[in-house]
Image (tube, rainbow, N blue to C red; front, side, top):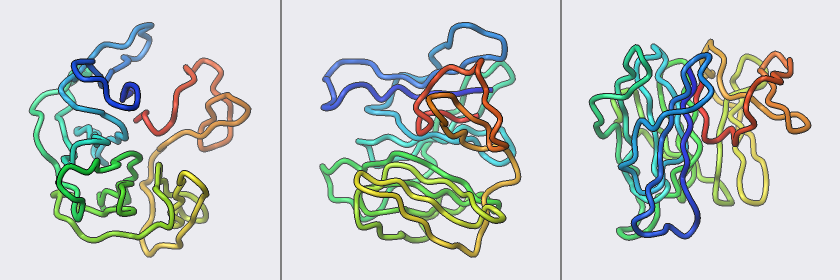
Length: 196
């Protein structure tokens, strides 16, 4: 199961549709599963694999959808609302990470915003530069790595990333699984816009 977002060009082009796609196992072409966001960006799948969560770089709302057996999305609803962002300012919502407890870590203009599984705001981790992506890795998946426009940061946490395959990383332009094995059949995609 693979979902991908296409946030479109910057600045946002009024009237231009942007999409969230689904690529079914064995399929050659992705299908559009949502085209209602201003600028869909980071996405992840809930721990139980039943819900797709997508943030919008412009809008302050983080959306969630029920994943149907055929990969289509249903029951679009708000998961959470980004906090402490001025009205009219882009949220900067980009990369997402989920921990073993189902808490969501979201990059934003304020740093890394954290929400519980029900979408309640828990707090913010300030980052010196605008953060772009976030992932758990390192020993026991307890280190939170944060990419930013001008740096990479890491924070030792008291939580851990999930016991599942998560974001894949790149090595020499090839998508690599967390085990380090190259996946040469995979399409080369920006990993901040892919949920597996």
